[in-house]
Image (cartoon, rainbow, N blue to C red; front, side, top):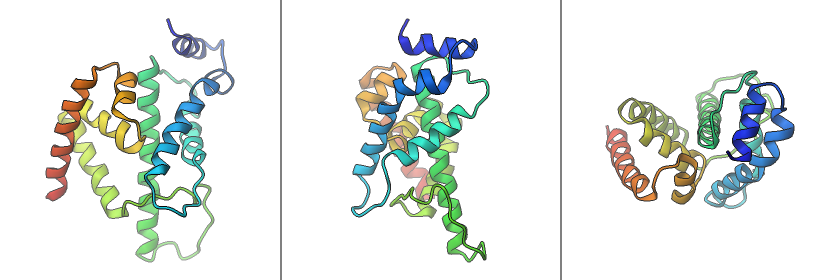
Length: 183
């Protein structure tokens, strides 16, 4: 049994602390994912690579009784948390662009910037929910690649699936999403 799984079991049983025991194991990997995502963003960003990781960690650690079964389950939850953060931010920017919120307030996550237009990001999120109903594994792969920035080998490691299987799933997911977004 891996150290990761042992810590998850200890946290579930109340013998270990999530922040002190699990965070050191996953922080660098989550930060590397964020750095990879930022490498694809436009130059001149003020975004720190840790901003998205920290917000996602706060959401993950905020759960009083985390029930992650293994590494794959944890990173799937992290990918979902990152996706939701980006979607919520896109919705807030969309409201602001349409004249909402008469008083501008400084937001904690104001440094999280995404180059994808808000309308497109929201459309992707809706299409992803539809894909999840059709093929949950394909939807998970999209979340891991698109929102977490994992490479295909990293997705294979995180999910425990063969790389070739994930490549076929990725081909299907991209085609399905492209068709859904064209509607």
